[in-house]
Image 1 (cartoon, rainbow over the protein chains, first blue to last red):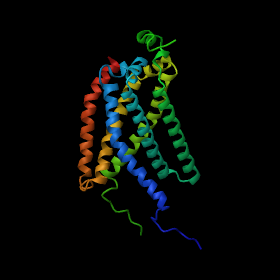
Image 2 (image 1 turned 180 degrees about the vertical axis):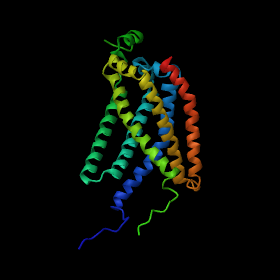
Image 3 (image 1 turned 45 degrees about the vertical axis):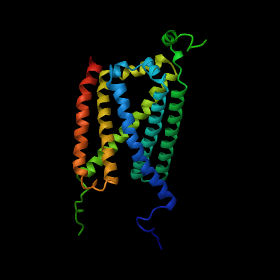
Image 4 (image 1 turned 90 degrees about the vertical axis):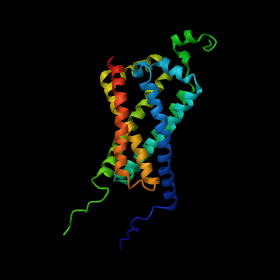
Length: 145
Length: 124
């Protein structure tokens, strides 16, 4: 005899609880990201010369202030987890084979984790002195050696 | 006799199409985010590498694509607020339709302010 599980029953209580946290995360991070990303676009793409002003010196100027480092890293973590969780939802909706679904989701979270580590390290270990023009501007007090 | 599924408040109307648009813009923004994290990481490699890549963002074709990106972000962000209101506001479901048009109106207003300025940076 073939047994079919009760329709609409959650896979497990623990799983349902985890899904609820994901659902809530999308909403809380969404509100924060709205402010952070609109601010990011206003400063980097709208103010001053917009896209034309973006270069290494622009980034160096911004990341000289810890406020913008924390701002950008917060945005990075929130956005990558928000985006990856959204992609997971889409994969769960459309992937028909279980092995494909599980592998796609693993790939998504590995990429997410790698980019979070990369982006965080890049922002907090940023060194303006690797640029010759910046070395001359900042002087030996900042750029040693 | 199988009959055509009855229409619902959701199927085939604003509720459905806003959901479709939310997904499409979300996927587009996700892939841009992957690229944008990697291109920004070049500031840790060399100023020349970073400047070379970021200069492609100032070309006419990518400059126009940035308008699409900003439009997608405007819709996704503002429609996200609509989704939250549908979920948490007592009257959210009742007003979901009019909230969609408010989202479109705010997005268009911001887009109308942003577009000429961005185009003048790209083509100016």
